[in-house]
Image (cartoon, rainbow, N blue to C red; front, top):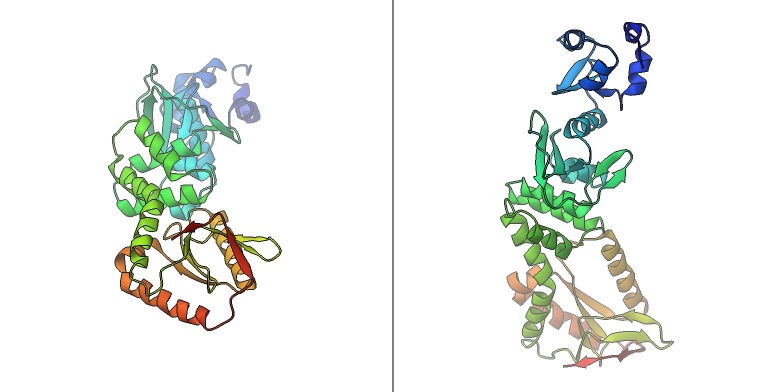
Amino acid sequence: MVNRGRWAQHPELLLARSRNGVIRVADLESEDMSSSTIYARCLPGGPWQRPLPGIVLLHNAEPKPEELITAALLYSGAKSMLTGVAACRLHGLRPAALPAGDDLHMLIPHERKVRSTGFVTMERTLRFPEPKMIGDVPTAPLVRATTDAVRRLRKTDLVEEVLIEAVQSGRCSPSDLLRELDHGTQRGTAIPRRLLSSWIDIRSMAESRARTLSLRLPTPPSHWNCKVFDQRGKYLGRPDAWWDDIGLAWEIDSFDFHFRRADYSRTLNRNTRYTASGILVVQTLPSRLRNDPVGVVGELIAAHEVASARPRPAVRVADSDAA
């Protein structure tokens, strides 16, 4: 304990009692500091500041993001956690993909009543997740933090940017995020729900469109979703469509953008294996099946002519779905 008056000569004692230089007024008062003294030191021009009711920052400079988070946690009370955009930042999502701003979104147990104020929004919840400790900050899991963030956004492009970044991180899938939206409050979920539903369905829709489009070709594929190996038995890939007599592969990209960096790396590695084995591959974005079917058909016809004009590569198929 700091005896009366000692805090003035030994400010390091108060800093030791604080968290990141942030301390509750109640803790200061427990050190025999009067409320009037605390109030006076937090006035403009004073050495301290009060970022939130009952919370003091032990300097008067511009607060750092981590100090504001600490202030919000102290204000929210025990068992509170950070969620939303700020939590996504702590999880490592790229700042450029997240909305700017210092507002903090806190989750608190439903039975607790703490009002939103200043830069802090309180959300009482019955669905209180197990927090992930990032440093010393209890943080909502990334799936929950992401859905909490997008529920508060009103522009489709901003919602899409956050969702794409979360999925590209490799720690969320569209189905995980959609499931979280289904179980939580329905407020603000229309835009993210629509986007996520389309991402989940896009693969099956793309394959259906590709099969329909292939009927326009002079020579349709001989196989669908077959595994292709080289003569030594090394796995090369599983093309969406395959012309076995000429060694031509047709791949429909999973999405118009690669959700995960690992997905993009796997695609590059697969295409390298195809090329090294003499396989000609045509890649098509799902959106082009719908928006440019004539162009896709033309590319496939041209590729078929090129593949027919050179010797068939020494590859074989297995587990084939013959057309």
